[in-house]
Image (cartoon, rainbow, N blue to C red; front, side):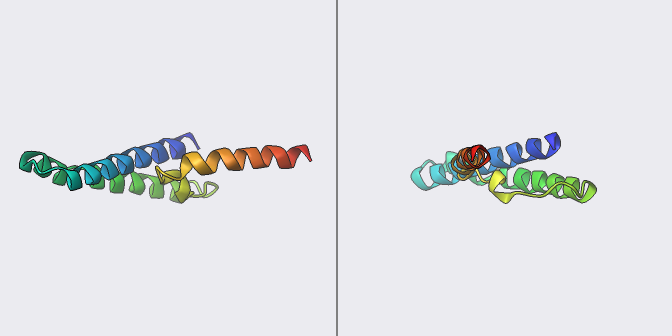
Length: 92
């Protein structure tokens, strides 16, 4: 499970980096910066970490892939709410 969370963190990191690069690419007119942003290796790294995740889940069948944990925008919102809901349900 630790390896799965490690993979998810890296997928989130590179997805966030890609989103930032795409946003910056839309705003800039500097050709040098545009070239650097277009050559960003984030997409390649996202695919590599997702492959590691798939390979891990094939080896360890008891693990389940949670795509929401790989999204940089959804995790913070969803995780806190679901933890709080579980705590409240357990108290009742």
